[in-house]
Image 1 (cartoon, rainbow, N blue to C red):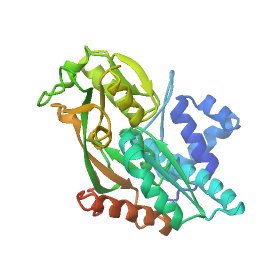
Image 2 (image 1 turned 180 degrees about the vertical axis):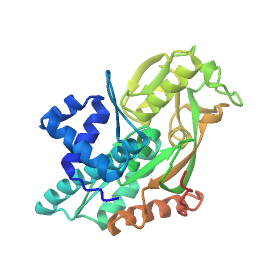
Image 3 (image 1 turned 30 degrees about the horizontal axis):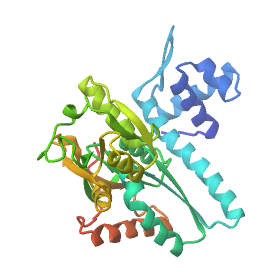
Length: 313
């Protein structure tokens, strides 16, 4: 197989996958339709396989085409990162690290770790974003981010995974609430109550919405706030109840009149993981953040981190 391609070929295939139309894909990458068709033909000849299925309704990807598009996303994302990094090097920054994390990791565990990390690496910039766990996995797989911190049962195919921490979601209620002394409670039994929630942009908000959709119920959010402390203060004031990470609820319960009630639901207990495409392939300044995450987890008596690479499907 003598497969030759350039970045325009990759962008063309990516646009075909997104639009389902060779005509619109050609327009998006500023090619004529005959030129785009010729490029696809050469790719197929080089690959020795059909990449597209043509029908009167448009085009769709064959399995080899899907494989090419997957790798095209990774390559193009890396090219964009390279441009960003070179620009930052020109401005005096020596490294750029991208981290995607779920709500609990971002709000509870990352701030002190990043404080120590940036003291060690003052010439590194960190792009930290909050995402849902399955979106984080996809971003790591596609090269959009360097390090991901996820929670719950998510597929991490083709990634190197490091067990990180365990945390549990609990119901937080004000002192004197009817559920305050319950041994545990089903999440479904709380849905008749007004809730204090995080903003719609938070991963935890989206996660609870998905749980409610599965129950075919509605989450009655009376007020939305931006962080765990504000949520606990609103709950203490009797505005509603809330579902929060136990690590945050336990910390704020020491100074507020709130109670933590375990949720009986299996999804409430969440194993957190650090995931990367390849630990060895990360630059040294990125591996140092993974090391600090390990040290911080061990200091809190969390299970030790040891990388493992799952078998390829």
